[in-house]
Length: 234
Image (cartoon, rainbow, N blue to C red):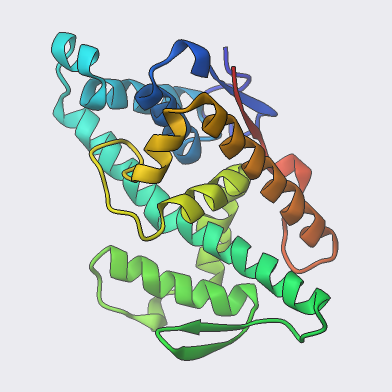
């Protein structure tokens, strides 16, 4: 049993993924669901069941997917694209900024499409991220309707429990062609097909979590141990 009440909003310490008892595709589905619904066990389980019916051959034959399953999947993809991956890119920017400063530089400047966005601050990044969210949603850019706080209070806050895993997902899925699997990237599907690679993925995510906690201790970002959880393959 997963250590959280459905919808209670508390960050669990661990989410167990029974990797040794699942097909690679289903390990991917559990990972996908944990990224999308880290705080709500009931919602996470509903998404896992939907992914089973949509993508796992045995379940597809025995229990046909319905419109609700597809709706849950499409919403989950939106959360990954418009919250988790944008938050991960922000986290990677702060890691790059730290490396630059440790090398004696002043830090990094944010750029998008060759245009400068200013120094790395949550406000500057958040304004760019909100424009990117509107682009992904097919909406016209309207800077008067939002502020940078929208990104920090929604996408960033909601992603913090699984930020290390979002970083790994971002790094492994960037520039890869999609496939008909839950996370839609060859690199991740290959990782979940190999127990050694699966363990390495979780280990790397844990290292990123530690790096981000260390950066936060020096003040640039709001990120605390109590905000985070671990995904543990069993």
